[in-house]
Structure formats: C-alpha cells, structure tokens
Amino acid sequence: MKKILKRATACLLAVLMLAGEATVQVAAIDSNGNGTTKTVSYVATHNYTVYYLDLKGMCYIMRDKGIDVGVSYVSNASNVTFRWQAYNLDKHKWSLVADWTGSNWVTWKPEKGNFWLYVEAMTPDGATQNTIMCFASQKDYSHHSLNLNGMCYNIYDDRIDVGIAYDSDDSNLTFKWEAYNLDKQKWNLVADWTGSNWVSWYPKKGNYWMHVTARTSDGVTKDYTICFYAARNYNYKYITINGICSVNDKAAINLGVSYNSNDTSLVFRWQIYDLSTGSWSTLTDWTGSNWVSWYPDSGNYWVYVESRTSDGTVESYCTAYQVTARYEIMGTTSTNLAQMVAYYNANNTYPEFYASSDAPTIETFCRIYLEECQAEGLKAEVAFCQAMLETGFLRYGVDVQINQYNFAGLGATGNGAPGNSFGSVREGIRAQVQHLKAYASTDGLNQPCVDTRFQHVRRGTAHYVEWLGIQENPYGRGWATAKNYGYNIVNMYMAKLFKY
Image (cartoon, rainbow, N blue to C red; front, side, top):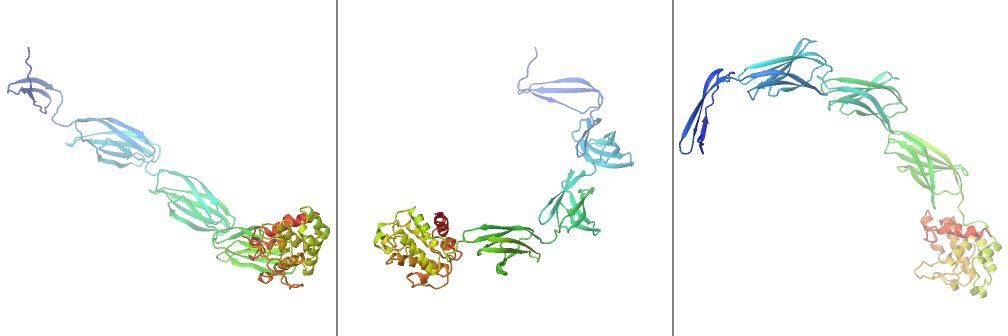
C-alpha cells in the first residue's frame, strides 16, 4: 500500500527542452524531513527553447467609418506585435496602416479601389510571420463623408435666413456662403467659412443665385446653388404702415397705427385736418409711441400719420374719420313741459313738501327749469335729468335734505356734508343751472349769481354732458367723481325722457 506523505513539500524541476528524449525528476519531502524522488522519461516532439508563432488567417468587419481587420494567430508569447500595410493595386503604391501595434485588430480607412492587405506579426525575440489577402473597397473611407441635400430659407421683416441640409460623419464642417446678383452680374460674400449651416442674408431687391460650399476637416468640398428672388430691400431700415385703428374711450378717441419694421427706434407724427375749417393741427410731433389720444369736436376729419426710421426713411398713411356729436350742455332745449311732467310722474309722486313753495305742482317745477335754462342758454333736459339723478326723482338721500332746495348736490362732498341750502325752488334751480354753465361755457351769467361755488370752477372744461364726470373729463375736472357720471345722465335719464 502506498504511503501518503502528510505536509509534504514537492519540487518539480521544469526545463526548456529541445525536441527529443528527456528525463524529468520530481522530489517530495514532508515536515519531518522524510522525502522521496521520482524520475520519468519524456519524448518532446516540439522545440520549447524558443517562442513560436503561427498566423491562421485574416477576417474583417465593414463599418460606416472604416473596415475593422483582424488576424488570427497562435503563439506562446504574450506580447506579439503587428504591423499592417496596404498595397493599392490601382495606384501601385504601399501605405502604412499601423506600425507595430500590440493589437491584432486595426481600423483601416482605404479609398475606393483594389488592395493587398499585408500583416506582419513579431514575437519578443524578433521572429516574424506574415500573411496577405486581397480586398476590394467599395467606397472611399479615407476622407469624411459629405452630402448636401438641399437649401431652405425663412423670410423675416429684417433679413432672410438661409440654411443647407447635409449628411456627414464630420463634426467640424465649415460653410462658405455667396450670392450672385443676376441683375448686376456680381458676386458678394455673405459668410466666409463659418461653422454654422445657417446664415442671415440682407440682400437688395433683385434676382440671385444663392451658393454654399461645404468643407470637411480633411478638405472634402461639396457645393449647392438655388435661384432666389428678393422681393424688397433688406439692407436698410424700413417701415410699412398697414393701417390706422381707433378705440373710442369715454373722454377721447385713441388712435393707433399698425406697422411692420426692422427698426426699434421708430418715431411717429400725428396730424388732423378739419374739413369744416380747412385747417391742420398737430396732435404729436415725432413721438416714440404709435398711439395718441385725440379729443375732437363732432365733425369730419382726415387723420394723417407719418412714421420715420432711424436712418430717415419716412412712410405715411391717411384715413377719413367722422366724429359723432357728444351731447352739448349749452344750446337750445330739446324737451318740453309735457314731456318732463310725464317722465317725472312715471317715476315718482310729487312731494307734499313743495305744496307751500314757489313750485306747488310738478308742472310749475318743470316750468321753472325751462325758464332758468333759457335765461342762461342751457339745455333744460340736461339740468332736469341731472336733478332727477342726484335726488332720485326728489326722494333725496342721506346728506342733502328736501328743505335745502339743492337739486344737484351742490357742495355735498359726502361723509355727511349736507352741501348748500337755498331759499326757494327757483333759487336752487338757478344755482344748479349757473354751475352747469360754469363748466360748459366761458360766457358770463345773464342773471345775478346765486351759485356760491361758481368762481371755483375752471371755466369751459366740460362742454359736453359726458365730460361732467371727472374720470371721463380730458382736463381732469368735472362735477362728480363717480365713474360714467355724465354718461349715466345721457343714457339712463335723458334717453328715457325723450321717449315720453
């Protein structure tokens, strides 16, 4: 029975052998120092004293940007190196692909044509092997690919942007843009070898060839040309006026001009021609705004606007405009006694308080309005309807009381302030009429002044009923602060009065 050596140490003597018969001995020893040896004979069929190398053949993989070529080999060396060369059969010329690289693969970028692909392999001791194969390259891999697919453009107010579509494996393309003026038979450089496939072009009006040349980083060039008609000049500041619009505000007519321009520094001048007087007036003189507020009287007008660019180009536009009348406070009365009485009776019963006054009936009350308004040249429907709004058809409210004979809130500024008091219906109506005349006219009074606030009014700042409201008054003046005060008199009271 074999004895098993515990904790034994074995030593194998390995030698590099030439081909032929050899003896191999192995010795083993345990921890107690007991040992043994074994000797065997071996016939070596290969010479192991040098590196060996055997090339088995080449293979390749077609890629978009080149051909990956590899060589299969067998060797006992771990650091075989390779040198790759190609012989162009069409040009009878050798070229180096890779010089003694450690990889048995290489990326080859041949031009189109027929080749011998030759590889040498070398072991560390200088021994070499080589192999060769024939190869037909169907396309040119030696340069970057480049194809131009077409040109497109976007037309803007101030320029034309032109672009070229392309395919390429090169991320460092450059482009040169040129334009040939067919009318003047002259080339102009638009952009010289820029990295962008888009360019902004500022041509004059005319017919052109738009030409682009694209170039790869290794010098391959392609070009593309289209015909182009520039319908107008893009090489200077321009302004095109499309029209005038108007927005009727309570106090004014706001006029605006619509335009197209490549200039951000336009200025505008607005003028008005009054057909009834045959005279021009200037609303604004070269302002930066394309809007203006206009405060016309009723009538027929020409509205004329000019626009000027920063380099002096001027365009103009004119349109006719008719202004319908606002309701003037001064003038001939359009209502009558029967209409006023019927309107009042439809809204309230005449108060008993006035039975002992100078206006014991609604008829007398309305007649006093007609008389006082006629004396000052003021329209009775305006004063009467204002009184109906202010008193709620003689119902009154919190601040002003019925015994004050104050029919339009004169001096009543709110927060309990009662306002002015008068001695009779006629005196109260006269004070109201005189206060209206202060706003509507600059003429003097025809009767003694009983309006204690007459001198505090800025005369002539409210020719129209609609301007009695401070918010709608172009001068910021007026009878009351309530929004649409004057418009409410016209639309909610006078319009109904005239229906009776």
